[in-house]
Image 1: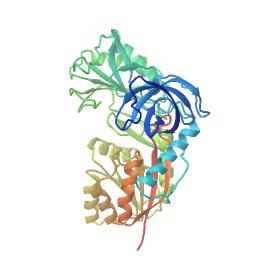
Image 2: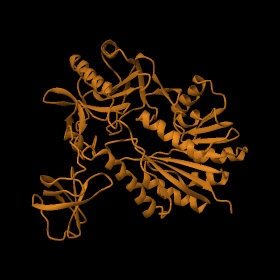
Image 3: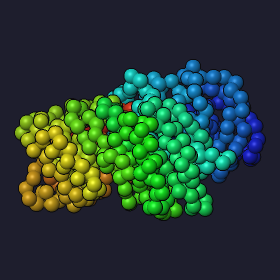
Image 4: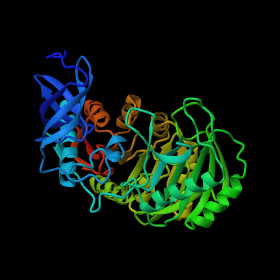
Length: 457
């Protein structure tokens, strides 16, 4: 309930007492919470009410009366306005602490396991310019083609050229591609009218290989001068080994459509991870922070304490990056993934690295586990790395039925992970330790690795 009849556009002085899980400053007027962008705990601000709801409201900073010692200078306010880098105003040391605290909160409130140790967040030496992939909308503004990002909770584009958290070579490539499209008179997509041609520019760049892929997402299949444009892109950006047209005809906010045409070069790039080479296609899931992915996986493998006699299952395997990294340490790796193209990449990646003790199949994780159990596969360790929604209860059941010694859970969503740990515990698997890893510096996202061991009754 709105306690003192707050009104839109009203101004008042408030103290910031906390950060929300999305990194917004939290102030309270009596017991009524106000969420405020670009405000840190310990700050006193003059705030203007922007929106009043029954349970909470939103305000913005008019003036900062007292500043937090943890505040760092933001190079561009648009990084906050768009949500590209919503924690970039907070010192990196405090970002790491914030993420550890977020994980501790879900372990206590959701998992009801306050006794499980949450280690300090593993951070980056250089927590900027780390993203190896960008998906940037192309729109028309004042008669010009522009690239940038949407203002939070809107479809209003804000032009951005330095994305701060992206590989600078990717930022430079986006500008070059945008200018080439402009020269060729390519029209930008208009979301409201569902008309125009160019929807997004997607860029992938190998962290070690520096190979670059440009994906041009178009509203229609017919791409007049598409190959000519691709040739100019290659000429101007020599690192490019692949230019792909992706066709998305739907009125949707999903970026990639089902149809792909190679306009130049090959349909993939290659890059290295923990010394192995991976083939990455336009739709492949590949972690966007290569340096921290290596640290994340090293921690997961350390938790697993792998032995040469181990049989390992790599669930939600993607293009095989977890399982293939450990084939020289274990007896055999079995992996499954629902995306057929990813499985094709995983098998190709096994060949590429001369790996013969890995089997990757297409299928739903929970169904494959049951099938493998029937044919007598007995895993010692199961690695799971599911999407944000976490694990299906039937998958947890099937995994526990196979009775591996250890389950190592890699998660990009601490809340669903905490929920799943409860189900594992009910079936005899105890969480031992949680390691947060900062895969997404300057944002509120945190990756975690949890070791679970079978409790022998």
